[in-house]
Length: 205
Image 1 (cartoon, helix red, strand yellow):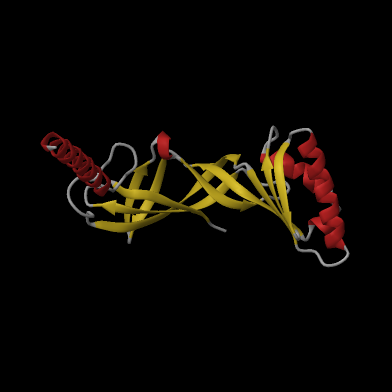
Image 2: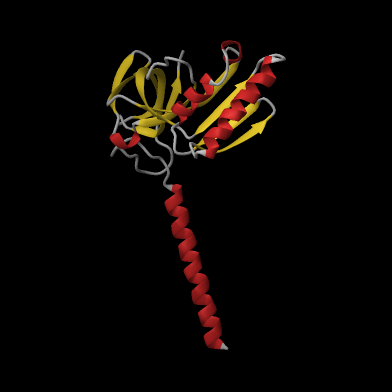
């Protein structure tokens, strides 16, 4: 009986050690770009920096969202043309699957890339239908190796490591779309010049 109590005590002690170790590890938050890291207790003192840069589209995400905003009868015609084409693409595995809810279609790409699927769908509708149909997805953008950020009037040149130079921003696809997007980049900069947390990357007009 005493051996059993000792064994239960040791198991409980082991679980407690694991819990405390996990808690201490998870409490040490605060990632940064590249090898810059912030050590110490609590959140370091930071300043908000903002800048702009051109990002290059390297790819698109696997999901394509189609919204038909046409009035009658174009809406029904557009949906019919689009779903017929998506069905053909699904049959040859270019599209993995798709879901339709009213005048909205969500498409998951298969063997064919998202921008190629968009081109096929765009060709399946006429000009009047295309003018009231939007195709949206996420663009995977590649940041330049260096970005310029400003804290008030002070310039900070930030080197972007290859492991954190890709971000996804929402885009509306269009014909003859440029591969370069204007981006707004924001970050929290610590007193030693490192980035606390992650960059905030959004598209600008």
